[in-house]
Image (cartoon, rainbow, N blue to C red; front, side, top):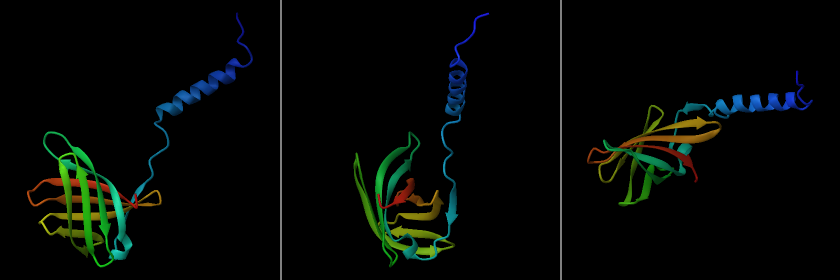
Amino acid sequence: MRRLPHLALPVLVVLTMTALLGCAGGPPAPSTVPVAIVDFKTVAGKWSGLYSRDTTSSSREDWVNLAINEDGTFEFGSFRQVGALHGKGKLTLRDGKLYGQSERGGTFVSSLFDRGGKPLLKVAAQDAAGMSYTAELSRGQ
């Protein structure tokens, strides 16, 4: 019977643990907890992130910037491959959520979340033509 060198067992243990941890997919994602929006000041500031257009062919993503003012007005903009998307409008607050309507007839509802200590604004929108959009926005990017 052949004996393994004295380092073989520790190396085998480390390799086994590395393989098992690699299969676990890394650290768990931070929890996402809903937070009621009590006033416009709670969400005032600049937000940005990816938004997706819900289409039948494929979901397209673009970067969007959203500025919310303390008086309940907002402006948004996105520069896409097919041109710019922008607008502004007025917000209302109901049931801990923001409801917005742009000057062109688009509407959206936004909910605030805490994701691992960082604010996250989830947005579901529809433009005047009926196209749906979703977004997850972070503060100040």
